[in-house]
Image (cartoon, rainbow, N blue to C red; front, side, top):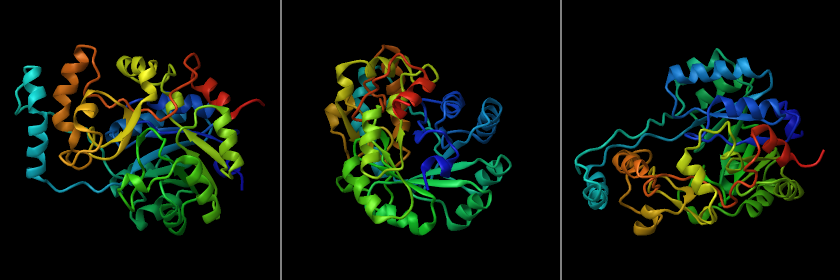
Length: 345
């Protein structure tokens, strides 16, 4: 089955859900252009989630995707939190901030029965998951709505696990991808192959459609993924400069510099490995640091520093998510990027 037939789209292009950089406007534009627009839901309150879904329903009659996280909230670890605060203390002093000050880490809620209760009334056509899958009974509820289910795999083993669990297609997320790794069976980033190595291996291992993700930013990358057997692609960084994106001015400026080509996988901003542009915090403490609290707690103590630096026009403590292929369509809106990714008609 083709990806277009599976998802009900005109094009084999999925816009990656990008929490903090988009809302319903992006999803609507991509879906109306023939791709699959996605809404990142993990950081939305129930009221905000309902409002965004209503906006999508009002803005398009095409298929769209709701994306949810499947992480387990961590247990408190006072020793690790103290180590993290000690590492950040000199920066607090530099900015004249109270080292005891903190902001709550941004809420990132895993998919739950309460969320399923809310979403069920909308019966979304596609639901995707990151960091594995929800409990079997919750997954059964989603499939019972008639939704197509997608999830990310960073290894062949994860792809096989997802296929056995009943997903309709697997997103093969390579090392090049921006944002958080979808890894869930192993948290060693060294186990994640590059996109094209992973795609070919997953295509050979599973019987369901495979969606390539990571470092794909133009139609040449799409064609290469299709040549390796992918049914389609998921792209995120390509959309970060679109007018529909909520990408901050500081982030947009960073994406337009040569420094955007220098990214790494780091746990410093959330506690979980994610790819972003290298900045001061990464340079001075290394991309992966054991002092960072478990996901999603690391961002709490960083929040005052991030706000202070951003007020000065600096991204020293900001997560500047970007894949290894920065956006190459700075003048296009989301519909234009979607069509450009699909390539010549």
